[in-house]
Image 1 (cartoon, rainbow, N blue to C red):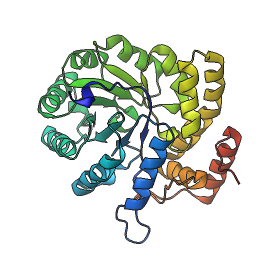
Image 2 (tube, rainbow, N blue to C red):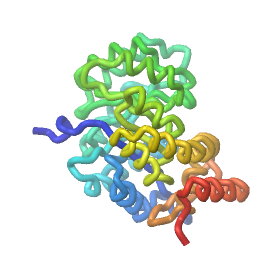
Image 3 (cartoon, rainbow, N blue to C red):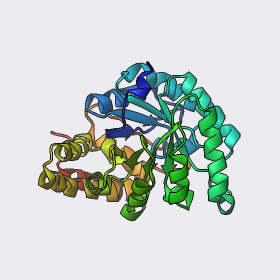
Image 4 (cartoon, rainbow, N blue to C red):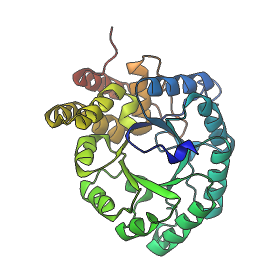
Length: 306
């Protein structure tokens, strides 16, 4: 039996960064592999490659393939290896899903096409997602991120798509709990709703989210997992207190500074993790931002030990 059919989405999945060589700008193999080992060794239930935090929009097709090839031997059969494959055309998205599956991805995350935003009606998106799911050799997760898509996925559309046998869940990175409630209410059987918002992680779990694919876990993995474990243990007061420490890291570093902030924070946390510089046209975190990151990490108890 395919292990993908036995695994469930739960816990914290790490949407890993893509490190680049400082001299050439090429993918940095050792740093990437070291990060994968660090996140999984710290308790993450899987990794997501080529997501928003992984600078997917700045990667070429061969780089996307290479990252999956590098990660596959490092991810055990009971952990998830997810790959972001969303593209602006259905043809491109299907091709990416097939290549990711060929290289060992367990499932694919598909952001909605959004360049022609006004044309992305529920009907158009339904046709797109069903075509991708029909053609994908591995399960599909929807990806709702209005910050970049400039529109949310419609509740009714999610309800319809959740009935498709190869569409197994959604990552909602909106941070809007009302929107999350709508997806939870709209889901079909065996359809997982995961949050992408570290700032509302505990609240999302209380509402019924299965877990989170959290960028904040890249720089505060132990704290993110502590929220999850306290919730699972039924210790709501502990989970809420831990969330209070996690929220500023998510809101200010992930939400406010984006990829450059996450990478700078990873470099400061250390412990074998590497962020490095983002790929242009993104620019590295500025000195003032790095100082603020250090203060936030210290306040949250996530700073590197001396």
